[in-house]
Amino acid sequence: IIILHSLLTGSYAQRDQKDPQTAMNLGLRMEEIIYNLADTHLFFNDLEECDQVHIDDTSSDDNGQELNNYNFSTDGFNSPSSNVNTTVRGGVDWMRKLAFRYRRIKDIYNNYRTDIQSLLGQQKYEELLQLRLDIETFTGSWFTLASKALNIIKQSSNVLLYY
Image (cartoon, rainbow, N blue to C red; front, side, top):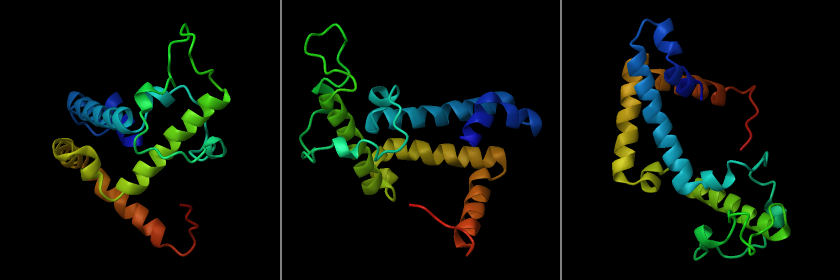
């Protein structure tokens, strides 16, 4: 988030005497990939107004229904409020559908956390790799340095990790 913000605002570029337009373009490319992923796979439009603090907050509302053939786009979760058949926001049915979405997000994370290429598809994955390379070049290896720092923290015996 810090990298994205400092690129989008141009603050990094101004501070380090880099081209602000290049920084903002990199930030916009990153933002596009993030929003595309969130919208395509993580129900961004459905969930942007929801205020659950944790993905498991709605698990008690989940009835365990199989989701392989579940059609999220037609379940009425975000029906127009003028529709008589609208699911009442916050009602039992709405909460169940919300829980389904969070369960699906959790499944996507567990299935693709080590294989983002399969989730994104080849073209989007190549765009992501190119963007990462471009950001690394522009920023003097931010991703590499951040990864090294996180690995040092992870390997420290004084750090408690939560998964």
